[in-house]
Length: 577
Image (cartoon, rainbow, N blue to C red; front, side, top):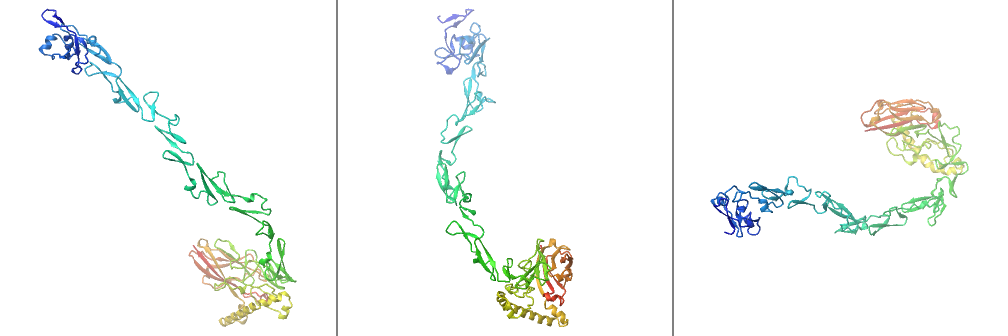
């Protein structure tokens, strides 16, 4: 019959019709492997054959053995079936290689044989242990594609990614400045602006910082900046962002005699003896006499730029005492150091530098807590103007009437000593000094009254002393000095104070000694150059107040002519931490 032919042995008829062979049922009847005979299809790799997708007989069935009497891959005549030539698309994406009774596929790059080696399947490179892409991996048939995250592009190796510089490639929408960031970018604003909803808006510095130009100016906001409007007397600094003082004194023409610059202003100065006119920018003479610089006993004469003090005939003006004094009182004076005349014939004995007049004819130099000499420890007016101590033996401040007046004194003695006065008529004949002498007579009377009272008290307390000793003791006067030193310096031999005589006849007189006192054993008197020093006889370790009395011998009758008193001093030494 047509489409059939006998076998080699002539015992069977072979179907030689050429129809489409299907390797899978799913491909029926759309896509076949190629046209071939039924035994070539079913005895090799076909599962269906013909226009109606006639199923091939199952292997090992009688029908299969009749159709395929030889081994698989051979036709009905026992010839090897060349699957590669019969089915050109058998190894898609590869090369088909015919083998005895079968075939195998050699796959292209990106493909691999399936489990049976009969077809090529795609290799998914993205799922390998070591993916080829550094970022994103997209698998394709037989290959792959590397991708990148937004903001990145593939590098030259096509596998890694590199950042896109949006600022350099103009891929941004920034108003002022663009800052590239990994995978993106950010917008920046110029100085004086701030970012707000992807826009740059001006910063109102004057509103955000109200005291920006204060207190010397006001603030005006400008686009991207601000300006200080300075008050009169101020200018803007180099930056223009703050106000600084204008140095008007740099212009020497403003003030010919001198200039003082102030914050926001200036003032012209004048030479000594002149003052600034309150209405005009010029210097006018200052009348110094309005402030009575010459005292009450002398007259003041104003001069251009200065003044002078004048005194009555027979007197001279002393600038230290601010008074008119006589000039003859120091002739043949008993003073060991300086002598200051008072009135027409009185005098005052001074002390060496660093010492203070104390008592009658004695000088004291005390020590303060820092170890320095305190020449005015008694609160006096200076070494050249001896005064009574401002603290008496009872610890109370002395009144003003204990300070000797030198205004017109005709026979003044030191520190309210006894007055050997002439007759009142003689005083009146002394000219201008007489009025001052009368003015002090009340104070002299008071001192005589107090001296008389002390004398009576002394007579009652010393009934068993000699009349001569009682007379001398009346002229003794206790002075009080209070000192303070730290306990760390209260060592044996520590210098506390030094005493020197102020009269010549007391020079080298060593008759200063420690008298009675609660703590007399803690102190000692040591001879020094021209006097004595009071020192600690032992180390004192406990803070407290330690008291001792120091005195000298009672002056003789001859020495008393200088109104000298026995030296008496009460010392209170406070030792502190």
